[in-house]
Structures are given as C-alpha cells and as structure tokens.
Image (cartoon, rainbow, N blue to C red; front, top):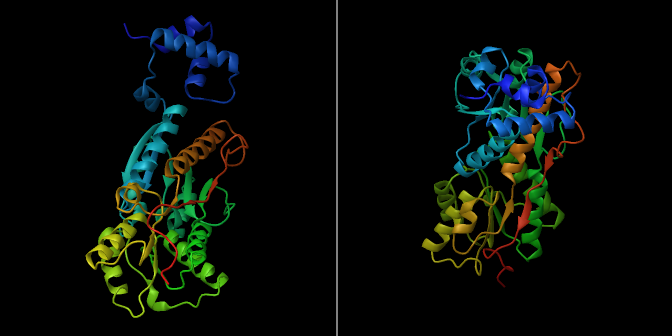
Amino acid sequence: MKATIKDVAKLAGVSFKTVSRVINREPSVGDELKERVWAAAKELNYQPNISARQLRGASSFIAFIYDNPNSHYVIEMQHGLLAECRAQGYELLIHPLSAGSGDIMADLEQLLSTGHIAGLVLTPPFSENPALIDALRQRQLHFVRIVSASDDPAESEPCIYVDDYQAAFDITDYLAGLGHRRIAFLGGEDIHRSSVARRDGYLAALQQNGIAVDQALIVPGEFNFDSGAERTRRLLALQPVPTAIFAANDEIAAGALFSARIHQVAVPQELSIVGFEDSPFSRQTWPKLTTAHQPNADIAGCAASHLIASIRASRNGSPGSGTDQALPANGFRPQLVVRDSTCPAPQ
C-alpha cells in the first residue's frame, strides 16, 4: 500500500504535524528533525499528496506570467523556476498572457480564482506595468518582479533586477575600444524596459568615448530575426556605412548577420556584430556572436527563492517580505562574451 504521512511520522518518531511542516519547508523545524523525516520519507518512498494539500487550503503553486517573443528566454526562465520550486516543495504553473489584452487583471483573476496560486513571478512587460502592480498590491497577492534596472527598486515586494544599462555600456565601450566610430543600435519593442535601458547604455558609452550620436544609426524595431535582417539591410544602404552593429538581443543580431551575408559584407572584417543574452542563436551562427551572457535560469531561481520566502514569512506571521541574507543577491549584470563576430574597425 502507498505510504501515508502518518506512516512517515511513525517511522521518524514525530507527530504528523511535524512531518507536514518539514514537507512544506517551514523554517521552524530543526535540522535534526528534518533529516529524520526525510530519511523516513525516502525509506517509505513517500510522495506528498498535492491535491490533499490544496483541499486543506495550502496553496502550492507558483505561476510564471510572461509575454515574450524570445522562446530561449522563456525556456531558460522555466528551467530556473522549476528547479527552485521542486527544491522548495512547490509546483510551477506556466501562464502566458498577452500584454496587449484589454484587461490583464481580468485575465489574471480567472487564473487566481482556483485558490491554488500562492504567488506570481512577473516578467517584463508585466513586471514593469504600474497599473497591474497596483492592482496586485490592492489584492494583497504575493508576487516577485523581474525588471530592468541599475539598482534594487527597494519596494515592499521582492524584486529581481537586471542591469541592462551597464551591460550595454560595456558592449558599446568594447566596440569603441576596437576603433569603431560608426556603431549602429538595433533595439527591440520599447514596451520592454530592457530595450530602452540597452539603448541608454549605448548612448552613454558613445558620449564617454567622444563619439557623436547619429540618429540614422539608431533603428527601433522588434526582438526578432526578421526585424534584425530588414533593419540591417537599411543600414548597409547608408553612406558611410556603419562598421559595427549592437543588436538588443541575439535574434536581432543573427538577422543582422544574415543580411550582411546576403549583401556580401564580411563579418567581422567589414562589419562587427554584437548581440545580447547569449542564447543558442549566438553559438549556432557563423561566425559565432560576441554577446552579453544573461543568466536567465539563475535570475528565475533567485526570483522563486525570494517569492517563496515571502509567502512562508506571511504564513508564519513574520513581518516584511520574508527575504533574508541567506538568499542569493537580487541583482544581475549580463557579462560580455567575446567571440568571432567582432574585430578592430577597418582602416
């Protein structure tokens, strides 16, 4: 017969309530008791009954809310969230939403109506939507935001920030150090604050290196391959042409590389190209793309850690967000990765 929580309690020599607290990762249980309970659970091959926990009112799902055209970003986020949820005894619900929906909160209400959702992980653009954030606060829901920022917003909820600005500055400064003076920027949709931050970092690095801003080299668009290819075609028609392109993500950069090849422009000898995020696009192109490594799985795992700590603190009656110094730092800066798509500017 399948082992029950009472079987585990009997073998471990503790009450079934203690077993429940251990399984739910409550911090009030000592290490010695935890080891006894987990050893007994392993010996009996005990599996917690998620459905029963829900019926008792213990919400055990974390919902991942996103609207992002970059499939690599979404998959890496899922991996990071899932690993942390499993380690902490939570289930992950993946819930895409449309940022263009007329009433995003109404869409979320339907998700939350089951009563099984303990908290939300919000990614851009939802995490950067003030009206949505205010609505969630009014409902007193637990959530963590992943945002583009150069510093911790220091708000009441846990917030994980990615320093796109400084990473973009580093990329542009690197290109300027190679002697490039006509550096183009291919952005993504401005609904994503990361695109704006990357453009601002690019502009700051131009100023730092004494390079005049040429608006013809700043081309807005979308975070996808086709947008990168089309905008690069237009850039290559300029006189003089740019000697380097900084693309706001690797898909755009791969499109730029494709367009350069179609127009018989040698990369990197005539045109250096840099992406952002270090997705598979950056390693599957030829030449391989110089980019900025963004640790999406680590970012997601950190978000889940902070969110679950906040949920548990609230259930235990503790004040504040529930974060503590044992959790990983909540700020990330993508790091420059130099590969084959960049070289000194042509003479």
